[in-house]
Image (tube, rainbow, N blue to C red; front, side):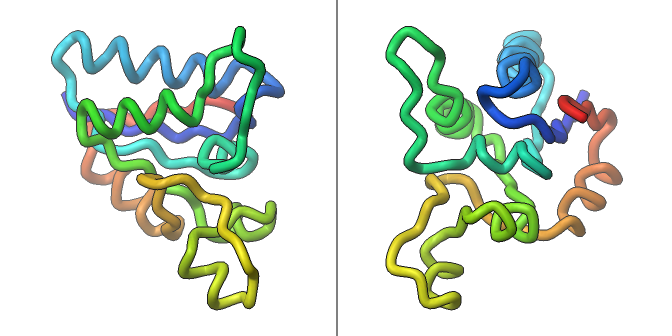
Length: 130
């Protein structure tokens, strides 16, 4: 079965991000395909390049990167939600005249149209966070 995840929860303010990552790992372990994770609202903070949680806590950004590297899962970040929260990739930073960028690779900034496309291509779209 083909899945997509819509994640709207901030990585360390509630359980949504941690639950979504565990769900993603579990469905891949059971042989399902995860097409993409779409980060929306405060979920865009999962793509923050400079996040540095204490060493005794899970590093959720690294967890998403590992999921991408191991299974080729696309990590799509809503560009409007990201820019509104001060997160931008190198291209957007240059476009807005900023000196640094804050989105970790392989997260990619994209539009809500990608979310609509995912919902049409996948068998299930599972949402985490409010």
